[in-house]
Length: 408
Image: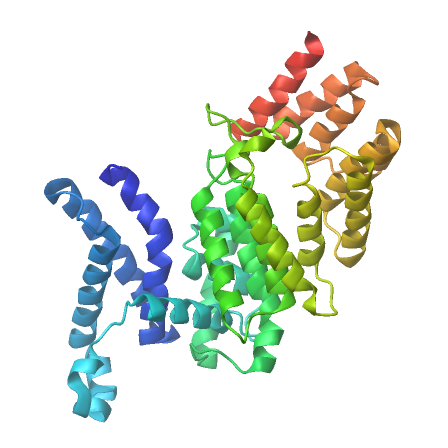
């Protein structure tokens, strides 16, 4: 991998780790300093590696540079010297130490997750700040996730940072009761991170495995901690495993998205399917059924290769339950597809048209599929509208192929 490819890849993975450790070390009062040091570390790599070559261990090189930059900052910061140094003179070496060991990175990220999700911060700001600091999302990516604009996100993040300072929120794992109260926001953040990778819309990429794998890594972190190993966490990890099992089948050799019905099932990763089953079983330990339980169960049935009535009836009932628990337009559309498999296309058309999701290309693409074979002219009109609304080139290509088939 060339340096111009490696540095963005490492930025996505390592930036958030460095920021988490530095935030824990400096406190939220100086979160911008932590972000600046992390960004400057990658700028140094971009300036150095083309001249001197990529180091043997790039991540270790980044940690070393970040550690040195942080030490330099601490040593020259007069406020830090005057307010803190006198109280810790007995351990001057430890004063400037920056611990970027794997254990401290893991602990720092876990603690940051829950610090950011403090109830003093509005929920949408919690998720936005988590995506920014913990996941390394750009402002445009966060805006896409919230279906809003850059200005709104920038204002939201600014207010959230100010609130963290005002409340003097410590970066530590909270009490068990507070963990339970904040866990849903943490899971929402990881869900959004995985979804941005799996259904990538903010860049011209169909699948961004790095985001999906990072979401899974953070979710594994929650499962491995006895205080956060809850049924909903296991359900979310099961959902991720089931979806990740189809990575290789979702993209063809040309980098184009392959729809579920057309995937080569021999490419599905059986090990990940088994892991998904394991975590879904662990998720049944509690009495509360979360949306992650239902979505993971739907994903489980979608790993069953046989196109049977039993499969689609189960999926339909799960969508019915999911929509009662938490309505979403995408879930409603997906339910309509399952309905077509159980009760036929005409009934599904009747249900779909009641949704009137006229700003969604998924809505018109589904109607195009449902009308195919019933009224091909209506199918074509809906598919053409879907192309107009589609945001990525990959989605446009898939829809165009459907139109081409109609015209044959």
